[in-house]
Length: 514
Image (tube, rainbow, N blue to C red; front, top):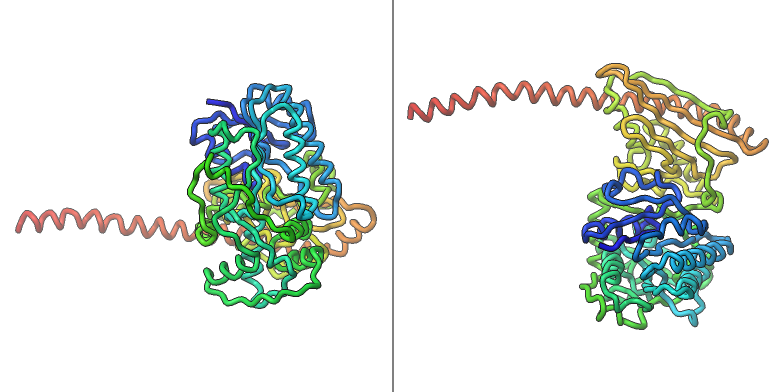
């Protein structure tokens, strides 16, 4: 089978596309700036992972060597920065040139829906410009243009879900009356795979959408009805996209940096103006209500395989490659070492559940307050939560942290993405002492940025001592309670076993006598 290169493998769409390609027998190669971020996925051992960056032409040439088709699933979406357009432009130019040199048979690109005559947002206009640049090379390009994607973990869906859940009365701008043609994520993936297997889609630009054309207001009302909620929406003409983004930042998990381009994109009508793809790749389209129900089922089952927060970066600084974590670079730190009367596996199970709905085991109100303060100044806050309450991948977002390293049973390393005058990390290590005894070493690292950073650390020092000490001890207590429950369950099971065993001959004797 053909070897397929997937860019954006750690992103929302790429992480779901790869298993589908593998199921169909394709050989898959993944391009990743940091290959560690693909560790631990169920499919990692089935793919080839190549380190590279679309902004590095030499790495692209290595990645494309021997490939027949490439999926281009990379784009930047940063508010307040015109530079994201330049990055997208440079990346697309690099990719088109490298693909031509590698003799690639085709590029399949997922872009954004909308007509340029409708004054598209910078983000949507950039998505379409990327398609133009890719087509500027000699390699055939298939471009799919999608509007709002409905699926568990998608940014647009989580924004709508949070608005409806938290606000009985919503004051909304005029853009909620703009028509949209949402599409289920499963249909987007089916089109991406279908185009690979249909040669007639080469050189084509195709609009893809679901069967329903709805306004954003319609979608919110329908979602509320499905959840048994009554919501009132008041439309006003005075909310600008920027004000709307800040409001979304305060109410939903979506940070302002991501909310702004999403809101700007909703101002223009995004509906399909050609349906040629339906003849070339005939798939049963998922209605809006069914797409929402499928997404909610995944959320309730804790079965969200990819999420917008895995790839969405909140600031320009987050786009830069950070140096390798080195404890010696951090002059300020808080170290907590607590021994537990529990096995290392039980203790680490408590550690890896931190954040999200579990919270931080101690001083949760203070953590909530810190998250609220971060939200007010435009940070990501705590509302991002977790993709899964237990499972962790490197690169996952956990509230306002990012998982930078994860060694099951031993180490969890988190990097802070909240607004802070410095560089902050939080590390958990678990060491085995005996069969039922272990040790937790919890270390908070901080590298201040100038005088302000030092003032911040020392001003927060009393609270840090209180919170970090309490958190480490509470994690250990939770592990010990879990170990006690396991011992109790095992003892009960052993006590019940003889009764069940002795009951068998009694029944047999009665049967024989009878």
